Length: 290
Image (tube, rainbow, N blue to C red; front, side, top):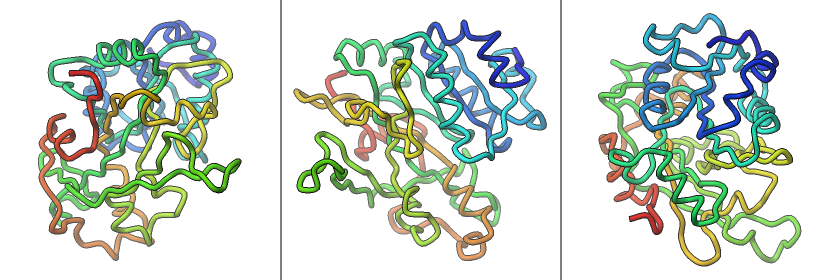
């Protein structure tokens, strides 16, 4: 189904937001858009909503399987603004997810358990949001793959990740409870090319809707409990978003493209496209879901 604007979708396609889980994908360009959509359809999302410019083409087998909305992806906070409008229109309690093209959600045991099963378990633990780590992917040969994107030759950093306590503006002597800012990957190794507010790799990418809920530009929510990595009594499930977005940006932005000839270093390792590798590297955890 196609919609000429987000306004039209909210008028005519609102029934999509009455169930879930719903995946919302913003296409900044056409790079690996088909594989991104297929990955999230295969993950078990009931509906996939695509925000994209009309000039971006989809494979014929996908065009009828997603809800396509004409949208300008290059306005400031384009994804955040759209998600907030969708939150207000959605039925309360609907699980929603958001990402960009060339980003792929992984959850523990995703090869044998779908996203609906995971969210059912997470809901039973009385949790309304899931912390995701954005794990940078990059091609190992930038001569062959100048935009740093290759699914077959994808690599990631196997170390170099760290967390800092998240400051609490209301209490300068103590960080926020059960909240951390996470760093690593290309945004850490090439931080001179990444503005400070964009260096974090944590994102609250899966959440339950509420009319008053607001997604902020740093991918945290107005409800601070949504931003916690665990409940008070034990660790919870976390997920990972394997993403070419940072590598692609560093290789296409004029301020960085000529300074970077390779993303490889001694801690690069091939990405296996499997949840076990991400769990073994500590980039997501199953919590009590075993």
